[in-house]
Image 1 (tube, each protein chain N blue to C red):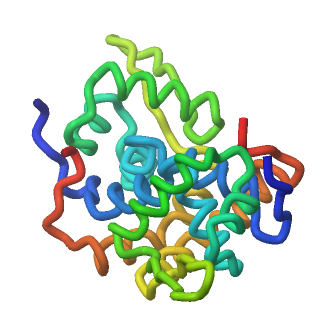
Image 2: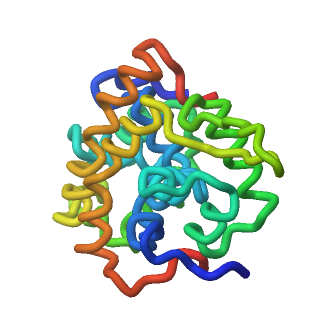
Length: 113
Length: 113
């Protein structure tokens, strides 16, 4: 194992970009920032994601403290997912990637391949 | 399949964050931005990555146009990888994640778990 180069390695950044970049996470976080709160709204906002995987990702994002799961005691019961402060700050930090994506990847692209 | 919600879905962003967030990509790009050019320097800058996977990721980043692979005809031959304009812009766009990571994940973290 080579000696670690502390000047060029930033573990917190690596964890962050790999958390945000995990398949579907970025799209779910952006959808939450753009107003999605219910499961069906996330399903519509992230084309291609399966129902099972959306449920799993929402659980993971809840466990990471990026979204907050709230059970609304209505009839029928409703469950909402909203960005926490930590999650909202992450979406803000990701915002420059929107412009980069539009410049280098282009508008008419599909992401559910 | 639910109808797509165009207001909340941004495919170019999703592709971008999943490209940057792919395991090791962020750390490699940051190392390149911080001066790593040779294979051994990337290996030292990204603790935990295997030699095989580093070679694969450098090929992928080259194919994506994010780094440029140059063969230096010295003796012995040397191969360098440097950020392209596209790659440098991506690292700039990722920069806010460094501060987010340091705030929410913390300095002393390891990322090669």
